[in-house]
Amino acid sequence: MEIFVILALVLAVILIIGYPLVNPARYRDLIERGRTSARYNDLCDARENIFEALRDLQFEYATGKLSTADYQQLDARYQTQAADVLRQIDALQAQTQNARGRRDCPRCHAAASASDKFCAQCGAKI
Image 1 (cartoon, rainbow, N blue to C red):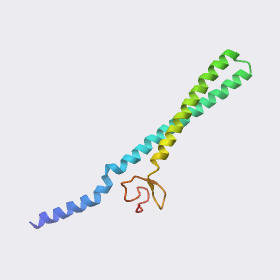
Image 2 (cartoon, rainbow, N blue to C red):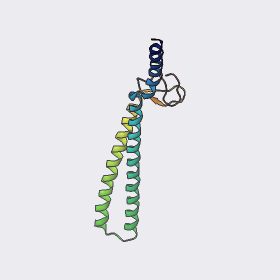
Image 3 (cartoon, rainbow, N blue to C red):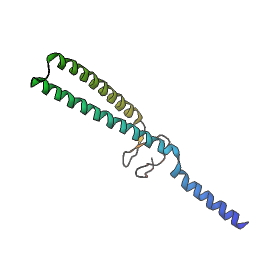
């Protein structure tokens, strides 16, 4: 009988200590931030590639390797692509800023979800 009480107490202590470590809600925000930052990095790379293509296009036109009609057609295409990528970056930044309307850690200023009681980065009480 005593062994069952001890096992029950040990199990209760393990559950109480372990629950915050395996709480899926805690990691949901971290995973979403990771996806957002990967998407943001991809968009920034696309933006840089388009700007580089525009610079190359202007150089090719200035050196006389492109006709005016070809230059105008390619320039319009790259300008449209650049505008689309910049719109997506702006929308993603606005979405991230709306999500950042959540609480921040008072010690390390890391973003925390509304359900967090402690900071996932430094462990400070929020």
